[in-house]
Amino acid sequence: MFSKDLLRSKRILITGGGTGLGKGMARRFLELGANVFICGRRKEVLAETAAELGRQTGATIRALPCDVRNGQAVEEMIETIWKDGPLDILVNNAAGNFLARTEELSPRAFEAVIGIVLVGTINATMACGRRWLKAGHPATVLNITTTYTRTGSAYVVPSAVSKAGVEALTRSLAVEWGNRGIRMNAIAPGPVPTEGAFSRLLPRPELETLAKQRNPLGRFGTVEEFANLAAFLVSDGCSYINGEVVVMDGGEWLQGAGEFSTLGRQLTEKEWEAMKPRKTSSTG
Ligand code: HXC
Ligand code: NAP
Image (cartoon, helix red, strand yellow):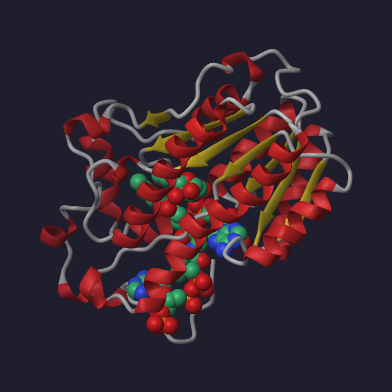
């Protein structure tokens, strides 16, 4: 689909790049000649992904453990990267999400998701943005949102409000920083099977079939389709796209977004209870 050197020598950081869509983008960017950095909280997951992708593509990939909620930790990670030269591209992909009845959420539950999705995106964008502006270094930011930013969605409210905030950030900075060489765009994907998303957001197997049937194309998106769109948007080949949120959902949102809004009529009391966190549960 692309020339093999589309992203040659571009230095790209993908937050949450150890799994799912982030890992898919890392693989595609490496194939297209980029130098890729991935970050996430789990060191072992990052190391495994870096080893696997390095082996498969023969390209350079570096893994940096970092919790994007922590502004100081993000600053230190970015400083480490900058020691060998500036990034050219930042992909804010790290996210947290789960299904829950909103009135049952604790303040910490809201904070967990808002911290990763909205504050994490702000932390990474500001750490890179300030350096780019100071040096006059042209760059691109790609944020990953969702289709329910437009409509909201029941049962994923911390995610919906955070992702809507990320789109506001994208459009605002596209204007504020555009004439200083920084492009800001976002992709709003519909459902794409990944362990991280589907383990948390599909409480019953048959809901998967219903979700596919609901989609105009009768299927979910693929990681490869997503990674191709991301490669296009961060490349210099589309330098005039700025402040755009590109939906990739098979046309689903046109017939009504808010993917999880009907769950109130579908799930039983027992199923809601089963999704609550166990006190001893670990992350990931
Ligand atoms: C209610 C919950 C909960 C749940 C956690 N909490 N899970 N509340 N229902 N299912 C509450 C906890 O009780 C706690 O509050 C607070 O949230 C923080 O929980 P921790 O487990 O300590 O948080 P942490 O270890 O930081 O984990 C963050 C996380 C977790 C968001 C809760 O799920 C995670 O690490 N997710 C990362 C990966 C991920 O979510 N990927 C999916 C992305 S898919 P209290 O008050 O008890 O202390 C996506 C888009 C999907 O975003 C769109 C599809 C179309
Ligand atoms: P995923 O595999 O769970 O990816 C989330 C990544 O974020 C993980 O690698 C996770 O690693 C990292 N992360 C979470 N909290 C972090 C923190 N505090 N600091 C640093 N990294 C953190 O899920 P995915 O499906 O690939 O999702 C990727 C992106 O696509 C997200 O923005 C999501 O909202 C979006 N999206 C996905 C879908 C879908 O259907 N898959 C649909 C719409 C939008 P650690 O746990 O190791 O930190």
